[in-house]
Structures are given as C-alpha cells and as structure tokens.
Image 1 (cartoon, helix red, strand yellow):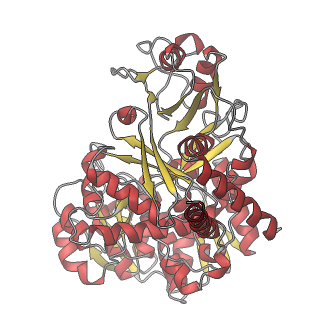
Image 2 (tube, one colour):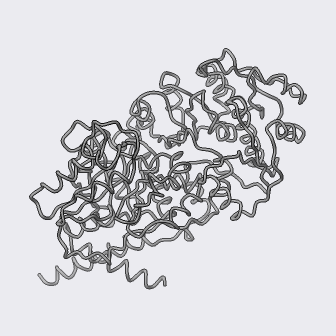
Image 3 (cartoon, one colour):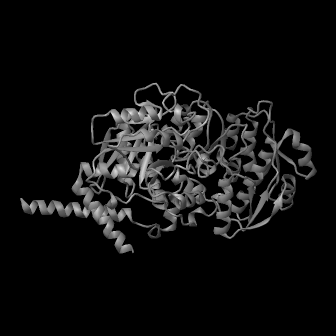
Length: 584
C-alpha cells in the first residue's frame, strides 16, 4: 500500500512539474512562424516616419482622414511607402500610447498636416489613386459610406462625400467608384473574391473610426444584423476578429458572431490602431502582476469577498477612457482594497501593446487583471454552427494561451448564456486543457451576471491538475430586480447576513451602473447621474462586517483550489517557487 501511494505521489509530482513548466515557458522558445499564427489581428509593418494629421472637424472630413490613414498603412504593408498617419487625439490615453510607440520604434515625424494638404501629398506620391464617392444623408444612416469604405481598400482611393467632390477634383483625382445606390448584397457579391476572410468591420455609417483598419486590410464592412450579415459570418474563416460594434441588442449580434466561431471586439470608437499595432509581434510587453500563491495565508478563514469589474472586453474603452479615467483605473480609491478588472489584454497585445505596459507599470499589488476570453463571444454558443466546433474552439484557446503568456495574465473570465449547460462545460474543459498555467476561470451568466449563484465547476486538465470555474454569486447593477443583484449597499447587507462564517463571494460590478452619491448607494431608484465604476464599490465596502475579508479574484481562486485539493495545490506552488528560483 505504501508502495502504491509512493507511485501515485511521484506521478502527481510529474504532472505538477509539467503544469508548472508550461506556466513558465517563455516566448523565446517559440519559432516566429508559430508566433505569427497565434494572432487574430492582422500584422502591420512599421513605418519609418509619421505624418501627424490635425484639425479634423466634420464627419465627412473624419471619414476622409480615416481613408488617408488606411491607405498609408496598406502601402507600408505592401512595401510601397514608409510613412503612416497619426490622427490627432488629445485624450491622455492616446497621447501616452503615441509617445511610447514613437520612442519604442524610434519613429520620426515627417511633419504636421491639415487634411487636404496631406491628401495632396499622398496623391502626389501615388498613395492615392483616386476617390470613391458616397452620400452622407441627413440621418447619416444610409449604407453608401460603408460600401465606399470597402471600395476604398480595393481601389486605393480616398473617401469623398458628395459635398467634397470639387476639392477632390482640384487634386486631379478621378472618380474610381460611386457607392451611392449600392447595397450590402451587391458589395459582398462583387468584391468577395478580393476581400480579407480573416477580419470584418461592423460599423455604424455615422462613425468614421476603424475605417482605416478596414481599408488597410481590405475587409468587408457591414451594419445591422439583417442579411447578408450571417452569410458573411459563414464565409469568414473561423476565429475571425469582428471589429467595431453592431446595431441593436447586444446578444442579437454577439450571438450570430459566436455561433459561427468568431468574436466581437467592441472597438467602434477606437482610434489609430494601424499605427499603434505596428510591429506588435516584435514588441516585448511588460507583463501584468499575478497573485503570488506562496504569500497567501491559507490558515485564515473568513467570508471572502472579491469584486470583478465588468466589460473589459471593450477594446475602445480600454484604449481610450479607462486607464486615465477617475471612475476606473485612475480612481483615487484604486489600490486601497483588492480589486479585479476584466481586461481585453489578448487584444491589446496586438492592437495597442503600450496600453498593457501602462497598466502593468501602474497596477497596485492587490489588483488582478483578468483576461476577458480573447474577445467577446459566448463559449457555450461558440462555433455551434460549424461541424468542427471543438477544433475551432481549441484553436481559439491555443491562441488565447499564447497571448496570456505574453501579457502575464493567469486568470480567465467570460460571459456565457447558460453557465450550467453541457456546451458551456465542454468549453470550460477546452480552456482548461489548452491554456498554459491557468489559475482558474470566472464565468458570468449573460443575464443575470450572478446566474451561477457562486457555484464552482471543476475540470481536470491534461496534466492532471484540477482547475476551478467560479461563477459570480452577486452583481452590483443599477435597478436590478432579482435577489442577487442591486446596489452595493444591498449586496453588502446580503453578504453580512449570511450565517456561513467561511465562504466565497464573487461580486460582479457592472461598469456602467451609476449611483448619485454615497447616501444613494442603498436606494437604486434615485436618479443615477454621477458615479460609476470603483467609487460605488469603495463606498459599499465601508459597511462590510469585520468577519469578512476582501481579496482579489485570483487569490480567491487559489484559496478555492487549496480547499478542494490542498496536496495538489501545495505541490503546484512548491514547484512554481523552485522554477522561479532557478530562473533567477
């Protein structure tokens, strides 16, 4: 019997060692061809110089600016040009990203240009071959600008609204395509053979942003979930990043994207991605901090409480109004108590590595950055319309593992339509198998976030390590009409009233739910016109009982693992420490 126990122990140690070896495997061991295959977003070559574009005011001018940026990026990728465009953006986030990228890639500015001066410059250099014409109607909602965006990428032409046509003619440019009167069916059927099957833009005709990416990489552009939306989703290569956003109810467009094996990026207001993503494959990212499981006092027992901020899948938010926003990352309360932040780190690693560098440099020790599933999709619906669902899901998980190794994230979260469904559990198993060094997963139900009621699912990965999937128990959500959701005051009262002296309470925090002031946190029916994000949480925890302890979500997952299988967890931690000391 002792002999058998010893054999079992040795087998477990070998499995633990393999798990930890994966945890600490570096990117330097991966061939570049493999690294390039581990990305969803297209590769953008770096320029030698940058043209700074300023003074863009009207919607039509903004559309034109996007096309100049996209055409320059396309020309750089095709080795026809060595300059890219930076469209002026005075938000502190974008100023930080630009300065960091310029320094890292040693890029010089060729000059500062107004819109039509830059258009003339690029026409003279042959970067612009002509123009495509569209009509920006009174409500801005006709489809011609989206169709013109597709054509601009094909014809190397700039976007011109009908009222600007005389200025385009002054540059001696020819009309190469008239998008007026064309619909999405016509556009897709006539350009399909030349379009990029690995990228899609869904964008409102009212918004200029992200058209530079569509033009640079020759993608289809759509708006609305009516046909040919699903026809295009079926045609795309599985695992495609869908840029922008789409019309109507969230699940109404994320659902179709999911079932065809793609993911949404919530990037409709993102700016300057062509330049910010330049040479991202060759950039080393400053990894975010992970929780050190060896420093946790596992003997302490309490009502453990963790908070996780929602909506980190949102690329445009994390690039533009997150890091310097005093409601969120820059909140004065950040760092005063443990906090979890869902984040699209896997996307940022490809489109804006500078954002991860900043988050890493400013991350408090008690904060956890949780990877948001490598894009917004529902794992239980992912690729169910494909005959090879598991193959598509596995490929996505492997890419996600690669990107998490780049960013340093060790915890994964996602939104599922039904946390208990067989399809969801199948997806959990794939993630457990394929993501190296995964500490655990957090599952939020689409509605309500707290639909899992704190339940923990267990998966055994290929190394024999047991990985937890923790569901949210409560949700801080304005005007929630269900027992497990509501104001911070309500949720804290429920936690305090729980007679169980040792349990785990993961609380999802809806990022956009606003509360008037501290006195209002217990009345979710008052006008919600002031505070969202971290401040409501900071006010609510002041009423938390002394027998409750706030910990980060990552620490909570380690504690759950120790409670469930202490021997295996201790072995994992011990092996991790040994490998860390060898690296030093």
